[in-house]
Image (cartoon, rainbow, N blue to C red):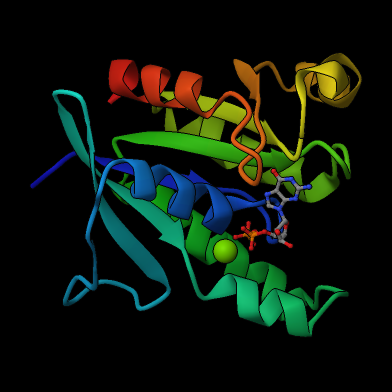
Length: 169
Ligand code: GDP
Ligand code: MG
């Protein structure tokens, strides 16, 4: 069994974009694991000498696109997903959306992440260039987690993510 790094965060923050981006560079293979929740997608990552399974909570994005206003049931489903992903993970990449800023759902998710006691790295995504970094991350410092501004879509700071992931797996 490889160590597991889980991507956790509310819908639309960019988890799947990040997942694909991180896997591409490592020439990874995604695979379905028999017996695990269908909504999680696993991809084997090789970053230099470190190998791990990166996990995306996959099913949520389609539902969220169809449901802009989150229903109570859907929120519960998100949290069930996040809880399971956190529970099986060795380390957590917690993703938030720098364009939208901090939301109550982020704070709730962060609480679960913190309570797990597992190593966590918070990525403030959608910071599409270093010039936006300070303004877009300022909201998130109160969460008391180490944070890194990134752009999953444009690649900003992703080499730093890879470096840090290797250290905390
Ligand atoms: P998920 O629901 O957390 O998996 O989020 P997705 O990866 O599906 O991304 C949600 C939306 O945010 C999509 O429209 C992405 O194109 C967009 N997105 C993801 N990463 C970035 C980014 O770094 N910058 C910008 N501007 N948009 C992004
Ligand atoms: Mg997704």
